[in-house]
Length: 213
Image 1 (cartoon, helix red, strand yellow):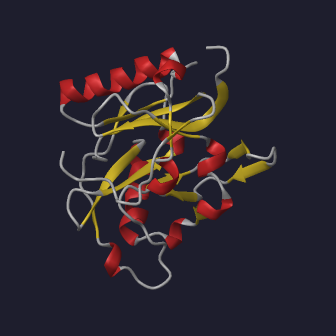
Image 2 (image 1 turned 180 degrees about the vertical axis):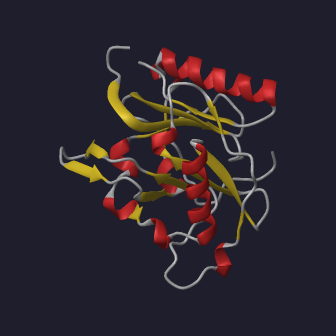
């Protein structure tokens, strides 16, 4: 597709183990300074999970909240590879209400990205520098706003999302991510309506199947 934007650090993902809708988050959105925090500001359980993912070179994990089956996804950007990778299976439970003062608050359906070092082009043409190990918290009110219409979906996205879901069905585990070459829980009531993304991007493709709707 000729109008695909080359945004290699953007996120395209499905949720709930379904092929559609496909959500799209440009790197200029998740890497905004307002989303950034240090690892030390995150809950201890998230810090430990990030350290474990770095040690095992796994791309991410779903962290359940004590409220039930809802939770947050933790992603380590440097571990998202060209080959399909499964999420970490070890379960972590997080109680947001039991965190010490000064801890970055997390809510159901948040996505925590532990970034790599590099540059991102901002929405107004500015350069945003991300540092290795910085974390960005993207809430569902942000990532749930834009979906990729089927007619704009690049072939690599269609193939990759189907491949990740097929692997999940075959192996009964969450195959979380791939960076290709070119059940009951309701979403929060303030999730808001979705709008078409402005243009498709060439990016990471994720299968956030533990997010349910």
